[in-house]
Length: 266
Image (tube, rainbow, N blue to C red; front, side, top):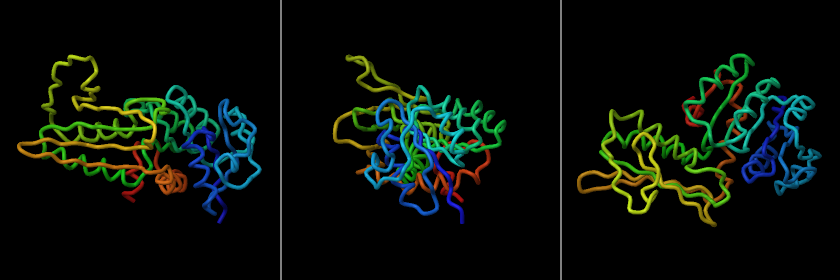
């Protein structure tokens, strides 16, 4: 069986290096390219990810890299400001896209779907690749049917580029779709922002502190009781099985798919 040819965009970032570790550890995958921005340019991608030298240097031009190495799949862990442009470049180069970069919401999907159809290639947008996080969203969608109020608290390291996390947004979107209304009314704030933000009436609180990787609680409140769903990624290794599975399955999808959970339903 021929290995799937993969490029990692955002190769020197924490998640990019995690993706490279997973690719190098699977005989069915072949790392053929690595793209970064300013940091890590010229370094061997394997060494940068803490593995052995693989002869693939991190370079700075995504389009040029894709033109040269012709990958089948590109994994994108970059920044919200550039992710949609990256997706269009990836599809235009004839590759499928596995996108872990946050900043894409359901409202962006119709445009990405147009690009996907034009290119005849698929896109998986996954705010979180950890199996436990995906199950947390699934359980939250079920629990919200039985509780009148819910809030989300998410915590990441202070270098995360955005807030709230894509996982928190995906969770709020999933719960909103499962209920007719949300009776939560945000109370008066003596300090502006103290109650966090809100998506479709669901409050979201973001914590950014050293020592965190990726953590989320979904807290439900009802008459005389609360229910808490919590997921903790203790290390970024928790994302590797999901990233590898996504690379292997993205070619079997149909257009644009939003959420890693759809791969688990097969």
